Structures are given as structure tokens and as C-alpha cells.
Length: 619
Ligand code: SAT
Ligand code: MN
Image (cartoon, rainbow, N blue to C red; front, side, top):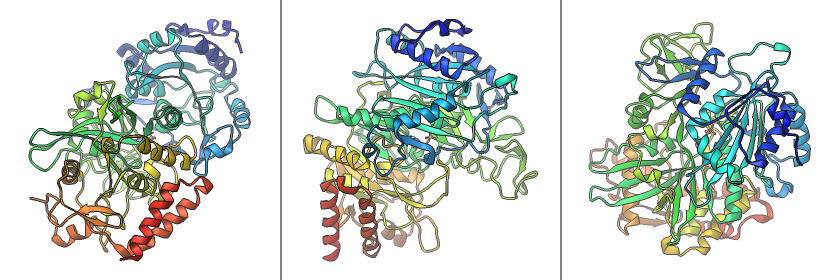
């Protein structure tokens, strides 16, 4: 449909409109529907970031933090009801319902478009419409993945400037006619009839919608990260997973690290854990064992593609961290703290100190005096918030820091290589208080895919809803698979079939969160997890003693380097053990999980489950 482009020229415009015809037509359609008061076409410059910040300061959305403590950094306090991803309002609107599968919400795309068109009608009235051209991954990649987000939120435009390659270079590429994924976002609070704005505009009605057949995203009603920074989960995971299925690669919820031994041998590893289970901490880990080094390539999303040499290469499509703040400290993640302290960060829903710094639970044992909490109330450690309930936290449990990745002191040089790094290991993990041992190596690729597909984890504050409830989270992708979960797992199996087995990364399953009968964590975690990484590296090299069990290879007694670690022999034995009785309970649970896949359940998973059942009955 050719749109009337004059509608674009009639509005006040900041920046220069692009020459890409598909983009101009789409912008004209959006303007006709959403009726913004002005257009700002983003160029991604530092001056523009400063201008966006100033507008957000003027609007009361951002608070400037103390420049002497955190240079060029800002604090946003959201609406108290707009603090996390809304999984119940996230939809995969494939044309065929069966393509969305049992783990996604689905609605007919035409019906969904009618609902959203009604909501978008005039939804940007009185606001500036920002046009944010971005690229997920390197512009120099063989197949760069472009997107354009249109949003009425300057907070979103500014955050996309941290999290993605955004601006003039992308516009130059778009001018050559390359395709892009249209991403439409509105906070859903028009300033009709000069209605006054609020610091954090949003709507009670929220929709995060993906049209995988058209490769398009529509988001309405929320300003929060995963719901509104559409290059991140919506594009780089949900839409990209569909592209990856069709093009023979994988879009995954994984961190990427380079581990180097004292002898100078390097290993590349990608690890999938659910949101708020320590990906950022592992990505920037400071090993406690002498001579070992971890460097960061990514902390949340990995795109895995086969190279010409038949190996699987990983790249990080993002340019920033959107990390969980609570629990981050100089002892748990000193490198994240160093990155944050350089400045240039946007904090969301953390507490503010009296001198204009930030604080959150776990940063220090006690806060440095009275604070302003994430809701803007005076707060102190003894009484909690003035006018609130005692015990209410100062920072929201899903409060975040948004920080450029180049500020990480641990950033690996390979981050800047468009080809990425060849993977030696893939690690799956979850948060389980029992059953799953500290580390298990799979027998082969198919068994590793079974481990990933049966991963389970207790829910966290990263998504709206109850916390601590056990759910299956295949490859930590449950909320992010853009198609049928059975087809997704089959795609993993197919890639393994097609590859040369000895070139595939080894697959491991870890659980840092096992507890004893008193509820105490048995493994200290954080920097001590380097001991597990060391065993994984040894296994990759064909060393590292292991015992074979029905669930895979576990570290043999004495194989894990615990030199200098404060752990009892009993705890160590238990945390690394195969608990037969717990696995007997687990098998029927896995069976019930597989029931949800329906008739498309991959044969490879059935065979693995039968093998486990048989091995257990022989015990
Ligand atoms: O909110 S985000 O989706 O960006 C982070 C997460 O939940 O993993
Ligand atoms: Mn994540």
C-alpha cells in the first residue's frame, strides 16, 4: 500500500527522514494512526543522548545522579505497576495457531491487529514520535539484522542508544534498501486536549505482540525494558528465533564468556539461565582460583551460527547490559560495579542515596544512611519507607542498571569480531533447591538437548507474577521462543544431526542453587563458580575425572578443585551427587512436561526419557 507521505512533511521534524521506501510508507501509516505532535528521527550521537536526557529530566522521568559519584547517570522511577515483563500479555500471533504452540499466548493476527489498531488510534497525541533505527549484532556481519523502533517514549529511545547499534550508520544501510523489522511501541497515554503528563506514562492495558510470519513487533502500554526496548527480547529472541529456525542457526538466552587457564589456553562458553539467575554475574566473573581469567562477550543474548570450519560461533547482538541491580556488589560482581561506576548509565527503580548516588539490597550490608526508595519515599533500614509497610525493600527486586558494554573492564577483544567466537561448551542452568547437581556433563549432543529441554527453575521477579514457583524453562527460553516449543527443540536436535559430532560444543547442566534440609545454599556460588568452569575446561580437553550416572557425567570425588574453599566434605559430596530418589520423582514430572508438547514431541526427547527411566529402574 502506497501511503501519502505528505503527512510526514506536515509535522515538526527533528533530524532527517530516511530514503528507504518501506520505512517511509510505514512511518506515514503510523503517523496517520497514532497522530503524534512531532517526529524525531534519531542519529545516535552523544549530543542526541544528552538532549533526550534533558527532555526526560524536564519531564520528571529521570533524576540526574551526582556527577562526582556516577558521571552522566540517571535514575528513573517507573509507575509501580510497570516493573517487569508481562508474560500473560505477550503474544505470538502466527497465522496458524499451531505454530505458536502450547507455551505461548496466541491470537489470530487480524483480530489482534484490530484490537491494537483501536488502542494505537491517537495514542501518541501531544507526544513526540521517536524513530530509532538500529542493528542487532555487528553492522559488518555477513547478514546484519536491522530494525526500526517507533516509540513515543524518550526513555526507550535513550535506552535503545545504550543497548543497540543505533543511528546514522544504520540509516545509511537502510538507504541501500536493506530490509528491517518494524517495531511499534506506544506507552498508551496520549496527551489529548493538553492533558498533563506524568513522570512515567503507561497504560493499564498492555500488549506485547509478535507477528512472526511478517517479522514485526507491536507493543502497547508499558515502558519497562523487556516490554519496550523492542530490539532486545522481542526482536533478538522471539522474532530472531523464527528467523534462526528458517535460516539454520540459533537465537538463545545466553551469556558468552572466554575462559583462559594459567597455561594460556582459552575456552569459549555460552550459558543459558532464566532471567535473574546470575547470567550477568557469570559473564563478568572474577575467578577465585589463581591464574584463571574470565572475559565477557555477552550477558543475556547469544546468536549461534555455524562457521565455514563446521564449528558453532557465538555473537552478542547487544551493546549494553540491562542487569538486575539487587545482589550486585563489589564482592558478588566487582566488574559490574566497576562498569557501572564509570557512569553513562540509566538506573531504573533502584534507591537513591542522600548524596545522589544509588543503592540496592545486597550492594552493602547496610545502606549509607537514609535513602529515597524506588517509589520516591524516604526510607531507612530500621523502619522501611515512611508511610509504607515495614520491611518493604528500598530497591525493586527487578530494578536494573543499563550500562554500555564497553565499560566492562573484562570485555574480551573478540566482542568486536563480527564472526564471534567458536564455542567449546554450552551450559544450561536453573534455580533448583534439590534434584539437579552442581554440574553434569551430557553424554552427547542429543542428551545435552534433553537436559536443556527439561531445565526447570523457580520463578523470579523478572516477570510479573508469583516468585519461587517451579516451572520448566527449556534452554531458559520459555518466555522467548517465537514458535512451537516442540519445533524449537527439534531444531536443536536437527542442527546436531547435521554437524560433525566432534566439532560440536560439549553440553553441561549446572545448578548453583541447591539447598540443604535447613534451606541453606550448599554451594557458595559467584567467584567460586570458576571451580566448576575449570572442571568443564578439563573435560573439554579430555581430562577431569568423572563418574557416569543415569543423568550424565558428574565430577568424581576429588576432581573439583576446592583448594582453599570453605565447604565441608559432606556438603561437597551432596551438592555434586546423583540423588536417585529425587530423580525417580523427577521422571514423571518430565513426562508431564513432555505431554504438553503434543504429537510434535521430538522422538529424540522420548528416547532420552526412556533411557533415563530404564537406567533408574536398573539402579
Ligand atoms: O526485562 S528484560 O526482558 O529485558 C530482562 C529479562 O527479564 O531477562
Ligand atoms: Mn534476560
